[in-house]
Image (cartoon, rainbow, N blue to C red; front, side):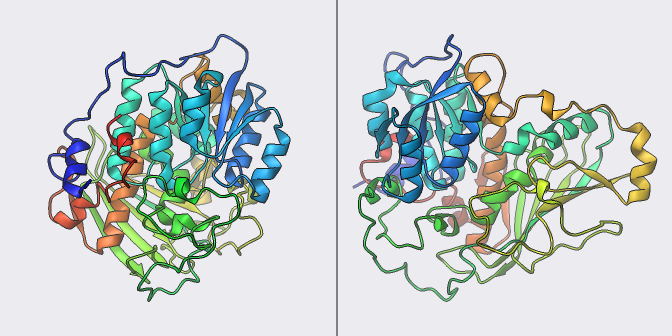
Length: 477
């Protein structure tokens, strides 16, 4: 039997969460795919083709830099899948991503992946194993271990481009934050408040839940077994698919995994936050063993880095769980351009406080939104005083967007702005937050050994449950 102990050992862990090594395949054992094509377009295979998958396929096609040559979805008869299939009648269709690689790998150069959080890991690992460039929707993976293994795999395949789908990392805030940090406008940051207070699909669920939802008929034509991939068996239920897998601990990362990547990404990269040494749940409303709380407040503490002071980052989610706003904050809702359209449009009422962040430094306070929305110095009087001192910021219209950036990186012409190595530690921070939510306790994290040192049960959650029988190989690639 494939036990938890054997899984930890195989995954290269001396103790749960301590990443000591990874089994490597020799160069002769690794399938060799094209590192970069000389042709004008990248041959792209799309894995996940409805809802968000359809959106990013459209974004890739608008670049004019790729052709969609293969489509893969476990639910090809869904309305969204049928629309995408009809739009690309020449693309080869698969329902199992393993067969896509086994049978068709010679026909594509890269994959774009828009499937549930927990399934990101096996697909991305297999893509790198086959020598394919990978565009992977955020979050990068669901567990701390899976992020660690994906970062390791990316380092071992430096010829392959990887990009995580936090699209704002190629938009105005990215270029602005970088320029302001380099010019010394953003310096001595000691506190960051990040928040997302919109309605979530699991909010109506009964928080007194005592078992998983009852089995329902699997939609006709859907491959439910492949949808589950590495996860332990769950009977099909409409509360998992389509859409709300993110709300369940076994499948997603909740609001923090969904939105923090769009809100704190520039803070995390350019302030070089890395991994926190302490994670504390300050508020968990509706906590249970199955799905994420109705309201969550988490505090992460990051150590000093060089001449940069320690940082305390506080995350808020929940419709009424608002942070305290500083004087001069201004209107509590941003214009629509600050929060891009999603495939949930029209299904919920936005909060009175738009998603965003507040950055406190020794001299200045900054207000920011989500995705690529730019920072503003607050209050307004201070912004006017600072205006003559602000550095030049490249016009994002003259730069490649996130999708162009990935495809150009596949061609060897650019470097991706959100590769696995950059996004990974931030995603691991989210994973630590999820562990704090599940245990309800303050966690002390050793950043050198990558272990939670004050709670062995929490430490085991860095690894998570062993994969189902037949899905172990992805953890040893």
